[in-house]
Length: 418
Ligand SMILES: *Cc1c(COP(=O)(O)O)cnc(C)c1O
Image (cartoon, rainbow, N blue to C red; front, side, top):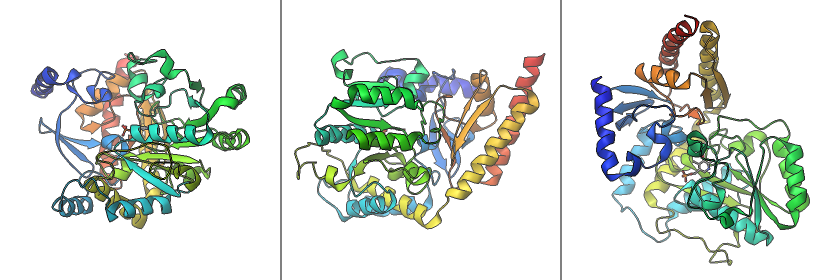
């Protein structure tokens, strides 16, 4: 009760000064009910609330923290970097170093430019694709989230799907007229859409694994056929790997599925928990960017030395560790365990997972969510959002989580049958 009152009071105070009390809508707990927990500390796999409670964190800053919270090498490198100044607005060799790490890791990327968020990366990649092809239209997929640019807030996942907003207010009809939405994993409908619009079609943008609408895997051959269509009709294929980049494999989803796009958007992991984004691809396309070319793109804090330092340290660790197989196994173990408990107690739960990402949906989601929260397990507060494991999530965390799952499901199963 005291814990709930604290959460409520913190939100009431925040709401006085911040719309909804939060700075990004899914954090509000609107999808699960109750009050969001205000956190003040996080270490490794654990999150600590203002209420003093400890939680095992599976949201991990929406996937940004693949090494877990406050990873010692990241913190050390940040402490050193911060003493040298927080922003230069001029080139640094750090930016070259991060760019080189990205180019060496991601198959499609020959050159890369840094931004401050995934949203900016996507906006810039689409602008570039339009300039390169001299065409206007883009195809996106139903349920994909590509950040909050006006013309991409059409049938998006993330906060949109969660909050049931098919579109958003404040975007003129005219701004979305070049955006065509196709169903994910439906080759027939996609082919028809491409044929119909091909004369003015600049780009197809796709989340190779949809991660903001449950974790939806691409059907066998789907990504390959996007590649073929793009080649056939001179369309730029953009992979939005803001979540999957350095998550599915060190080479991202394109490394994992072995399909190479023309442009790639990154974010989240490459900032090691600091604000960042990046887009990159073929040199032939990237050279159109100002100052070499005529496509304007910029940012006061782009390439910020602090964010870039966290990114460099994170990528170097990942490269050295190559943790992807172990992460996959841990995730599999957790998901298998949740499924087993769901069967055991007859609770309707659907789990989708790939690599170290998983989604959990249920007609009892709100109860599952708050039950687990009470047991000290923090999931992403919406069944449409992905959950993540980090390299520091240990066997002990998984065992504790499964114990909590057992307890919560047994209570729910009992209530359903009785
Ligand atoms: C998070 C995300 C974005 C937006 O990135 P921000 O840094 O929140 O602007 C874009 N695309 C995908 C697939 C994402 O998951």
